[in-house]
Image: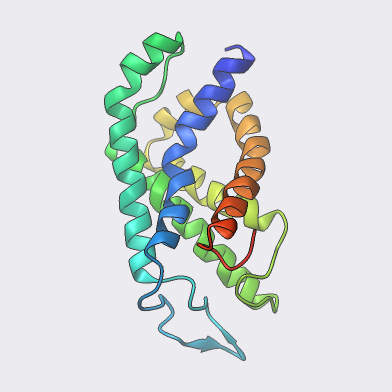
Length: 181
């Protein structure tokens, strides 16, 4: 696979994981997952992790994966690049895994004394990637091995922080987020 193909496959394969946390912001609010409870002196997760956001984000990611599956063949043929389709368990794994990774990062932030919205470089950009890749690999190891080759994984690790910073900056400018990270 050449460099352009690797970039395209990495972006396409990760789209169902890239979208859920952004979608969750659009419907923010509602009941926090932790119910407002603390662990010691700090909240378990915080008000930013809600059931509504988690469900909406996951459903949005799954819907996007199913849509991408429908158009993968014609888009791939037009681009001259084979593109992955997403079996339902993989679609769910990527989308919910992204949400779970972000929720886990929130938990770690609270345990390290960071307030909601505080920056945690590295973790902020890759938390959802780890969750998405882990659940996708569990959901369908053969599919994961076929599409997430080492070069594709390398692109994901490099490309994701750049996309994350860019999209969060746009969300901040549009007043959809309180902080630009």
